[in-house]
Length: 184
Image (cartoon, rainbow, N blue to C red; front, side, top):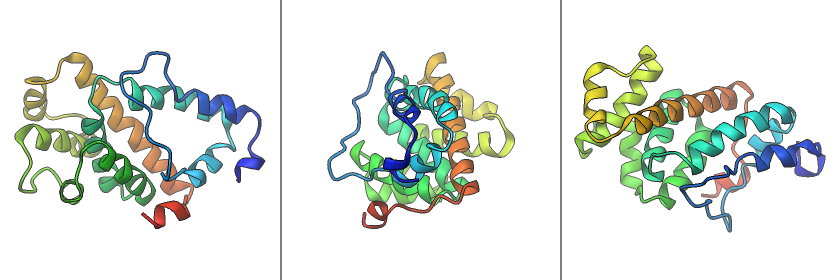
């Protein structure tokens, strides 16, 4: 569905992405992918989109995790779930948040790839464990909790969950890469 065809309620659904209290800046928009294929699909259900966007807006802009930490998690979810759409969208955001192309390739390789700090490897491992077993293993939890407080631990789990549901949705709905993602 093209933006001109979106129902009026979609404006409120998009506005829900911006939390009242933001810790992180809004992403750059100039010359950036617009996510129109995903948004066009979500525009078919504005009430659901508004509810999800309130949650996802927190994950993107108000989480206690740094944007770099968030993008490590999101890209690992995309890699594990095979979500090309999520991968390409967040590959761009990762670059904006200090993750270089070599690290992006290592994210796809996983937590045991050479070059990760023990903490970054534990974050990636937590994604694998959450998706695989539905919980973070005790050893991984202990590594993460040595640096993260309770809120950061909760934000990690909810970030993985938010982007896992998006990966499942993008794949289930057959959302194709936007032309502006293909050019990146």
